Image (cartoon, rainbow, N blue to C red):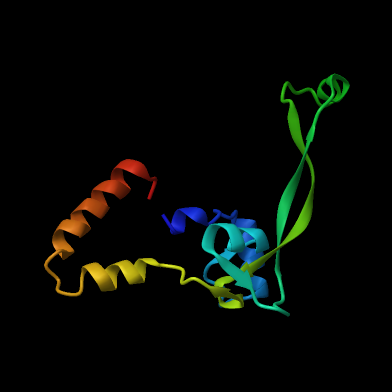
Length: 127
């Protein structure tokens, strides 16, 4: 549930994030840290900038000119600030490592969990 709250960034934005902060692990916007994770961005934290599309509703004349039936189109990009988890403070952000430490410390659940995870990946993802 925690990991599902994070946005999936495009390869271009992943490159932008890495270029600005190679140590970044979990990133989110200012308000998303507050609302979804109950964390606050530390005062003076330097934002990481990502490109976000500017989407505009097209008029019928613009649709005809662009030869499209789409009602909306990307007309440009703007740079939005995001912050790494290391730049925030507040409630802990759980990770897969926390789940593994808690549930697999005694090694008796490893095989069943591995098989369930493998089946999930094969059925629900393109990995």
